Image (cartoon, rainbow, N blue to C red):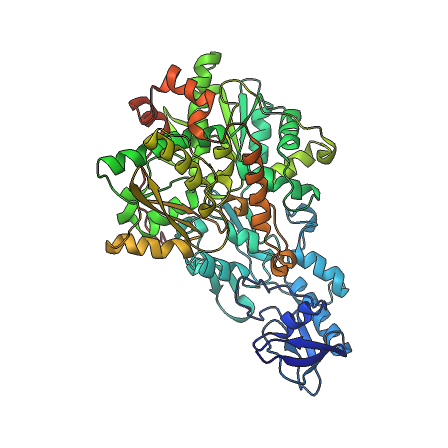
Length: 584
């Protein structure tokens, strides 16, 4: 391929045809400030922060969309470029709420950092501001357009990653804002509440609806016995809230912090992930043997479940009836745990620490309630747990490692740990299904074909002479073709894992925010987080769900067997068709 030669800041630079000025500069180690640019979404040049000067050009150009050409001379820091960037940022700030001290993105805000970088002056441009919308009606996501910079990153993420297009530009000119159609609440449209828009947002215009103070109230209620559980992916991200590198596992420190906060029991949702495999694996075997509805699709991801309820309600029978692991944990805490410890279930308050915003909606579903009680009472995201630890004055990085409480639900296997990575549920299920069908131990429990963060994965696994075709999709963009095949009757698969977020739960909408700089650098932060889980899996003495001793005891002493009547009563659910729009 013939390369292009140009100069940037008087330095000789070589680029490839089709490269933008921004790409060429970054490859040469020259930094150009950006705000709207996100590598996985097509550049729009919406914010104009990356403007640069081209020798001989009449006007400045946006480096993120302007292609390089042979002999081009670019000046990133000319007087015109510097003044233009500063003026642009000051204009953005003039329509911004600037309540930084009470904003959850304070000190982790790209606009805040950019304002420092360009030397923005205070209130250079003042006057009337665009009328804002504050939408906190949905259970998971809060939208505050007074903090929106119209970068469009959330719009592109919703449309190009999830294939929904719930968010878009509304009105024109000074009145432009971003939101659902007619500026209605996210609660009234087909939003899957995945939270990927939050992760893409450079400011606090999109955040999770917080439940921190509800949890604190429960902790201070003498009538409440408060149980906390942590999803596997949380340990792979929480350290980032305290300045630790991406890919740092903090299982022991996290457990220690939760005990210091004062929870009455600290459990790992991995126990319930093992329980999920027992129920889901048995359900798959039953469908295979009795010619039930196939392919069976996993139901662990509540964002994905909302998507199919909105977009493909005719395919709901393909979903596993299993509740997600944290809902199963809540159910056994308010039944078996309550019974053994002689506690009224109404006085048990279950808190789930999750990498997922959609879990906040999941716990409110009518299908997840028994005897008028929710299985889980509150969900905190990884980010919220980080804030709560700081509120309690805990020096996280100096904590000594502690173990989860070991009574009743304290043991878990490597299969439960890997639930947090895309392909992890499939791999965990195959470990158990293989041994149940063959009655032989696996030579290797590592199903490498299920691993990785790139694209759609598929495989054929031969078990006892029977080929089982499986597929793994993470994000609705990847899931949609699979659903279309099922709809058209052309699907070859028996079992499909679908996760709502790219990379799975390690990249959930409630995880620590990864800056655009890191996301644009090419560093695979999703794989770095997933490695934490695979490393822990490999280090554990038991790596198959059906070998968990406490799971065996739970069935022997309480549930009977997988998919029993009692198990269905506690651990299974059903789904509902949802109207795509509820606009009045």
